[in-house]
Image (cartoon, rainbow over all chains, first blue to last red; front, side, top):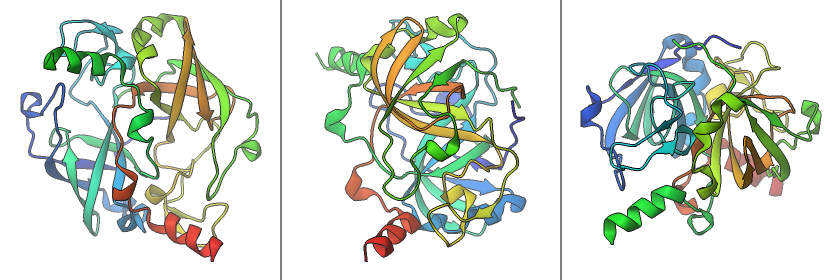
Length: 149
Length: 149
């Protein structure tokens, strides 16, 4: 296996996990900056052309994992691979952000849900979507229905 | 930083990289199996409810990285973070698959583009999509237009 290394860090308005919107219908509307280390800046060539990016990052302030747990907004337990819990066997996270613009090694983005200072492992272009009408959203959809009902 | 560990392995029809569809318009239509290690099987609870999954995996047969390179189907160079190249600072890959069904620790999926035996790092539910009309696809869209033109 490889040894993960930070290619940069997130600048975000969130300094503690309580301030990050969570739960059903939580919207990630915060602006932030992906600050890429100067040594990796050449890898950003042509990224300006993409409207959305996948950001792969680490839950660096989480330790250990639970295979089954209850999300904060849901009393029922679910398997960790059915949730976005930070307590995962590999503490890897994935966020889709909208790229507003680039200034050298800085990517100004919309839609961050990371803590300030979070290490970034990778950035990839978002190329295509599964149409909404083809998605089944399991326990999330059921919990939303219960909340509204 | 954490030490990555496999939570399971991909069973795929692809045994060498040449056989994996690549390039503009490449479609990933192969069926495969995500074989989760028995010790992590409890983490799959409730995953059957989701139609699509993000699979995070490692390019375990790739070494080193290039910050700028030319994809196989494109003579022009691009930054690695604007491409899906396996030669990345962190050899982490992301694939969206359709979940057909689950048999215990086995997830039967559609749309694999991994080599047989590839280590899996994480699985997450696919919850929402960026609408196609909101996506800009940069050099990929330009290359597609040139190919058609």
